[in-house]
Length: 387
Image 1 (tube, rainbow, N blue to C red):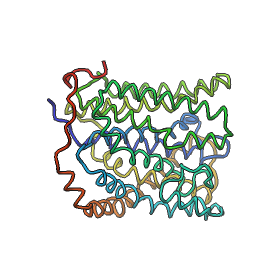
Image 2 (cartoon, rainbow, N blue to C red):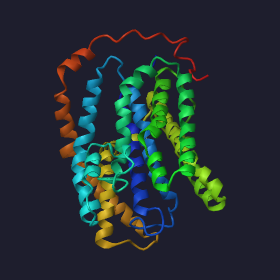
Image 3 (spheres, one colour):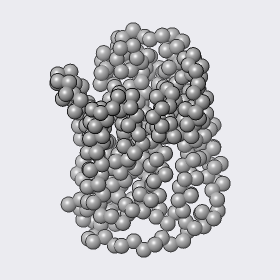
């Protein structure tokens, strides 16, 4: 049986492209007077970049399941997640407070800000503003629920046949569509927005990543070159915005309700294609050191980018809507990457190492005990487990 690599450099590199997509979305805005500047060359297609967070959610589920150890004490997992997430988040929050409150001359709602510091802001419908603290960390609040549930979900998943996991994931993704539809039809825009951003609603995207990881580890393969899902993603984005410009309001609404599940599936296919390539021992552009390093800095890039963009708007105002703003976009991305490197080098990486060394030894010792017996699969893992 092929030995599966624990380190998947191509997925690390893909993190940067997902973070850059979110950055581009915030840079160009939603339309009207939002964003720092808008290029007709990439707008409105750049708005789909906000769904780079969907890729992150699917990727989180995949990577957690890829390295999952059933016998590891849950406390070890939680301890390491804290060391991985909070240090850089708390430092970036200081810049966020300046960008979203001080520079914006906005009164601070301390309960909401404190909720964002602990990454539970998406649980309450009455936080002020809708995305308090460092705005982009609402996604970390979503991740937090998955982290809380993962030690249990992982143990359940390894005991189930992949076809049942796939069926449950499909039901969950359909549920995302149904919840979006129901919330939009029955709630106010503000309340519907909270429901659709609630952490529980995103769990099917994490499940999709988990299912994909287990399927590959159990021997399932799909003949798929990386360029295929990338082309499919590009074609979907083009058709999505062309459809929005031509369809009736009711059909556009239905189109919007399906975008999160579809982007999740396309993200899973991208991950699948690159992982299968690495499992075969092949390397490509995404395995090169510069892109891997950008991927390592991508979490810090994500934490900082929107605050920098917002400060720039306050300082210089919006730029004219023309293709020249692409040079500003790339220049700002360079600046944010430099800051991300500094945050990673001097905060995220050393803090995580310091915290990891202090993992309670009683948890580590418990993790060394043999795992409980897991029922053998009903057929060899080398066969297709989805068929």
